[in-house]
Amino acid sequence: MALSGPIVLTDHRYGKSENRIVRFYKANARHEIRDVNVSTSLRGDFGAAYTEGDQSHVLPTDTQKHTAFVYAKKPGLDTIEEYALALAKHFVDTVEPVSSARIDVDSYGWQRVSIDGAEHDHTWVRQGSEVRTAAVTVAGEGALQRRWVIGGIEDLVLLKSTGSEFAGFLTDEYTTLAPTHDRVLASALVVGWRFAETTGFDWDEVYAGIRATLLELFATTYSKALQQTLYAMGEAVLQRFPMLAEIRLAAPNKHHFDYDLAQFEMENPGEVFWAADRPYGSIHATLARTDAPDAGTAWQP
Figure (spheres, rainbow, N blue to C red):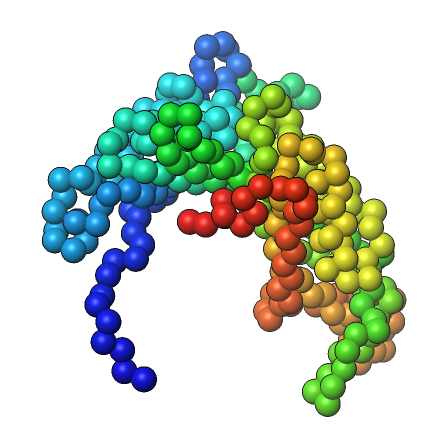
């Protein structure tokens, strides 16, 4: 069918991506570090910039970059959620054409170097690939202004050498996988959790508690499938943290296969594995409270 209706701009946003900001706190001899990657995205009355090239309502992305650095100084980067809330609120409250602002922050962990059992005051070593994340959206004005906060963690690499199986699955004429009742379970988790509340708690304590819960349930859940493990992890997080409305988990199933050592006249009782990086299973789960408001809406870009 040929279509002939008018063409309209149905959605638009713009911003400054991946501003790499390192903030040191030097009030005392023992310095503190915050290392983040900040992206801004604004929505509002910018349609004429697309349809007519009219930039009169467009706040330059370069200005957004400068603002992200200024806000790293004041109010600062004590917690990435409060920083993102302040930055988003600034754009919505002070830039007239802006109707909503989304701020995405990746936070990179550093661990103090220890010398002779004592932590060094101003030297750190990077803590692997794991990244703490926050995505904050502020929309509207005055008493009707709304705030959505999504905390998270990316590339949380976990592995257990036993306590997992995969059997009783559906088969067809193309199935060759043999069932197993003892396998390696490994993944690099991406997890996001949406807050129903944004006050009355410590952001860092909640993050640490959620992370600890994820590790605990991965370790202690006897897994009949990675799907079951993800559900157990998400359920425990929501049960323990009542300020959360929803949690999403994505887990690549990093397969480990017993390596055939029989060809070399050696036994391999589940000790030597081939770690395959591709292809991999891709498992996703979303858990929410039945009374959670705005299910799904806060996850939009």
